[in-house]
Image (tube, rainbow, N blue to C red; front, side, top):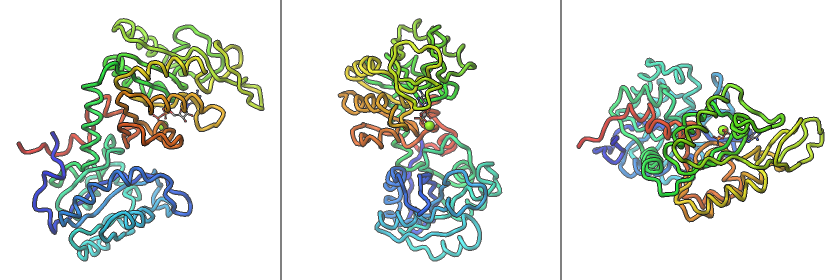
Length: 393
Ligand code: ADP
Ligand code: MG
C-alpha cells in the first residue's frame, strides 16, 4: 500500500507541493466548461488546509507550445477561491524567485497555485534539473493527479524521486475502486467496450477476456472484429493492422468460454450521400459507413447490462458527438445508469458522453482518468504511483 496524505504527520507550517490534474476544458473567456476534475481534487486540498500546511499546487493544462495565455491556470485559481474556505493566491511562474517570494508570505492553511507546468520544456521530458527546481520549493510532495499518472513528467514523477512523498485522497480512491472492480467483480461481470482505435485498447480487451463474463463491443472498434469474422462492413472505419489481433481475441474468448457480442445491426449512411440520410441495416454493403449500433443491438446489449452484477464501460457505441448517431451511446449509458449492478465508467469520451446525457450521478464510480484509467486497469498500477513510498507498517 502506498503512503497517503493521511499518513503524513506534522504538516502544520510545512510547504506541501501538491500535484493535481486541473487539465479541464476552459473557453476563450476563461469559463471552465467541466469542473469535475477540480471538484474531485478538493478533499485533499481541504485536508491539507485543515492540517495547517502551506499548500503549493502544481498542474498542467492541455499541450501548450511554450507560454500560451489561453492555457494559463489563472481561471482555476478563481474557481478554487470560490470553493475553498482559505485564501488562494496565483503565481504566473512555476519555478524561480517570484514563486519563492510568494511562498515566503504564504500563511498556514492557505493555497498558492502555480502556473501550467507544461509552459516549461523540462516538464514532459522529465528533466531532473526542472524537477529539482520544483522540489526546492517545498518539503513534501503529494501526488493527487490520477489523470496524468501514466506519464512520467517532471512535476509528477521527477519531484517524487527527490522529496518525501505520498498520494492524495483522489489517487487513493481511484486505486481502490479500479483495483476492486477488476479483482473482485460481482458476477456476471459485463464489460462494454467501444470507441475508435483498436490498437490502443488491445491490452484492455485481453484483460477483459480474462476477467469479465460477457464482453459487449460497439463503436468503430466493432467493425475490425466484424471484418475479422468475414462479415461485410461496407466502407466503415476499420484498422487493417488490428485484424489479426481481433481474430486472436475472438479465439481466446471462445476458448475461455466467454460471451463476446458484436453489433447485429447498424445505423449508417451512404458515403456518397451528401445529406447523410440515416439508414438502419443488418448487413452493411457497398458504400455504407457505420456510425452507430442499431436498435436490435441496443436491445441485446441492454438485456445483458440489466442482468449484470457489475458493469465496466469504456468507449462510446458510435459517433455520439453527432446528434444523428448518439442514440446507441445514449441507450447503453442509460441502461448502465439504471442497472442494479455496480457500475464503473472510465475514458475521456465515455465520461463526456455520460455528462452530456446527465447520467453521471447514477453511476457508482466514474474515474477521472482517460488513458490513465485504461493503463491502470491493464497493469494494476502506474509509473507515478509506483514511485511513491510504501506505507510504513
Ligand atoms: P474514450 O475516450 O472513452 O476511451 P475513444 O477515444 O476510444 O473513447 O473513442 C471515442 C471516439 O470514437 C469518439 O470521438 C467517437 O465519435 C468515435 N467513434 C465511435 N464510434 C464511431 C464510429 N462508428 N465511427 C466513427 N467514429 C466513432
Ligand atoms: Mg477519447
